[in-house]
Image (cartoon, rainbow, N blue to C red; front, top):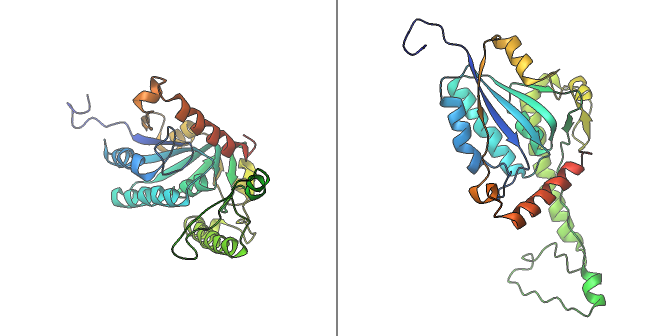
Amino acid sequence: MSKLIPFLKRKPVVAVIRLQGIIAASSSPGRLNDQSLAPLIETAFRRGKPHAVALVINSPGGSPVQSALIAARIRRLAEKHELPVHAFVEDVAASGGYWLATAADDITVDANSIVGSIGVISAGFGLHEFITRYGIERRVYTSGKSKSQLDPFRPENPEDVARLRALQDQVHKNFIAQVQSRRGAKLPDEDLFTGEFWDGTRAVELGLADSLGQMVPALEARYGEKLRYRVYGQRRPLLSRLGLSLMGDAMALAEERALYARFGL
């Protein structure tokens, strides 16, 4: 009707982008990455001239590169279209999930949300004693002394560990810089960058979030009760929806459960 009657005031619209799952470059179901999210995010900012964009986040983290790419895309579009961005955390916005939340101008959490984990982690196994016990010989041939590093079938090399820690330290510094640049004076002098995580209430007290609440009442209080929503989220691949990728789905689910379990979820 508003298109037929130009002078009729249009109801405000908020584009809602759901960011749920592990952040990873892979194309497995439920993975968040810049390549798959780019068209969705671009459309959300452009279509129908929204008054604002809301990010609904439920992610235990994952790839720091993909986290940075997605957050940077959101900021570029927010500045280009001059739109406010509001983040709403459901179960968890930890590690890379919190990196995504910092792309917003303000962050609202539930009192029971898990927030934080501003750190970097790498994990693996050491299997050299196992293969030795069973008479298995590991053979690796390289050109370049550092080509083979952190081999789980060989004893741990202190030089390899030192290189890995140096990389982790730099990524950690980049993460800290992102949080400080977006949260600024809201953060206290307390060290929040140890990898620790908190419930939503404590996150607000620490300046990692701005308020407690839920998306609909928070947005209606800001933009009015006649607010309309356009929801954007990733669709599962056709084969997955038909149940034809059971093995891949099972492995992806196991990985996802392991990451959520780190936060007691």
